[in-house]
Image (cartoon, rainbow, N blue to C red; front, side, top):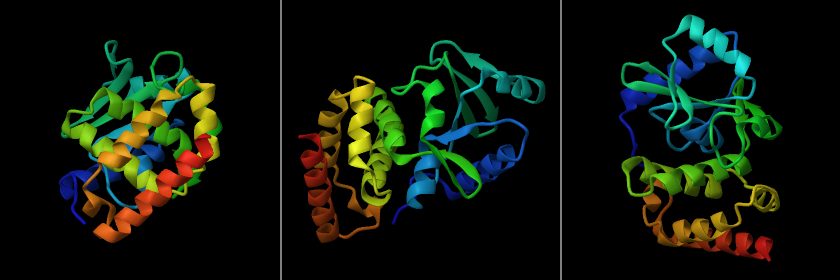
Length: 209
């Protein structure tokens, strides 16, 4: 299985995530690291977190060079090659509002992590925005990894699509599944990939009816 990012960068990023998880502010891990925690397939270079209580930003302002990105509706902290992107309630624009994300979390390895159904939807939102880029390709790999390895509850996934008026995400999801060819990134051989893809598509289609 190939590594998508340089291993030195991903190890540095992981160490940073563990470090900030021990600091006195609360956050939810989303993005590539959340996908890794569910699938154990691909580590991430950058760190994406969500903060549901905006008061938690006070700690970051006091201790880091926190920057507000009004265009992308997020806050940012740079650690040399590693970027920490912070999505905040009532400010950031995610497919599922940040202020709702605390309903869909669990603990993995001591970290507060978004559950796979909500994470899949956020990953789809990112993929739609940057599908022609390198990060968009990584989004597609993460989407496939979640589908293949995280035991997605398809009923909950579709309930969330309906709740947040995102039913069009299902068509895009099918397109990503059908066009995906890089089975090596999923640690599968061609036959395993073909069978698993058929199973996933069947499950999704059956649930959507």
